[in-house]
Image (tube, rainbow, N blue to C red; front, side, top):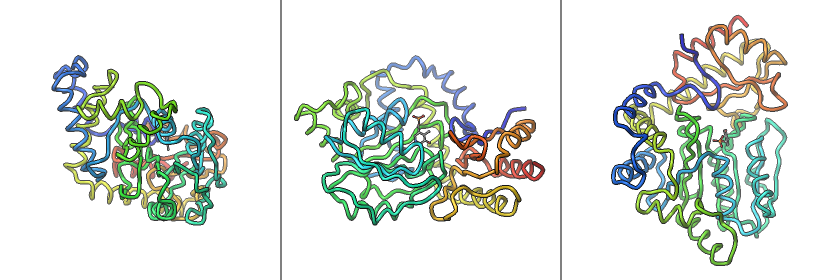
Length: 358
Ligand SMILES: *Cc1c(COP(=O)(O)O)cnc(C)c1O
């Protein structure tokens, strides 16, 4: 019998994954030339599907990267001359900040104690800030930044770009792209696909900034800079040989999600989140790590186990259920549970039944 995965990434594959893999083999997708018309059609189709799911306007570019860590690097290189501002609500926000440091920029950090929300609208962000980097959903702590509070930051700092890491909240989170300049995710999380493909959404204004920086002689990277990515994307191509198989699978899963309907997907996500949180509220020995509800993620739950993580994970594994252990220092004290479209209601029911007896 196959395991059920609640790990946050890679995670449970989407329910139609095997069928699409099989079709991809029959259609010889791995041998498809990335310079041919069929690939261009696939790229164009994938953008259209993503636009339908995420609702970004036509001036947004869709770039494919190798992963979300790469997307962080590309964003810093292409939109920051000197100063970026990083809100750190966990390890992924910290990683974004460190990326800017590695690239010899002058990043500023606003670190929040683990498990707590921020004071977004009250932050003192210097006027010279070119980019505000936010982890909308930090998978290490389970802290989510409500979109309304992010928009308020944009309203008070209209000259800075806002980049959001939506790796573990996409495709659930609804985004008003008039207030957001860049967003990114990887397919091994909310889309239930194999790792190795990142999707980076970039406004035309951000591409313009990259052009300006390039003219000034700032190093914006080589083959994956926004200028070259933009020129290629305009003709539905990529600079390098991309992960064509994964792009194909992404398009197929997007089609399935849209067939089911995004409102249904979102309602189901909330329903599954509610089931899990209600269970942990009642179950002795478990408590959500994030105490304030509005900052508590429902797409990647982090639950305190009082140090019983190893025992719990073992007991579930014996029943064919794989969960995520705590991140880093929380390895033995937290469990992390994905609530993506690939985790179905019946999977959650099975998980909670198994957790009754741990
Ligand atoms: C997993 C994750 C990343 C990194 O994604 P990769 O595809 O491994 O580069 C970045 N941010 C968040 C919030 C994540 O959960």
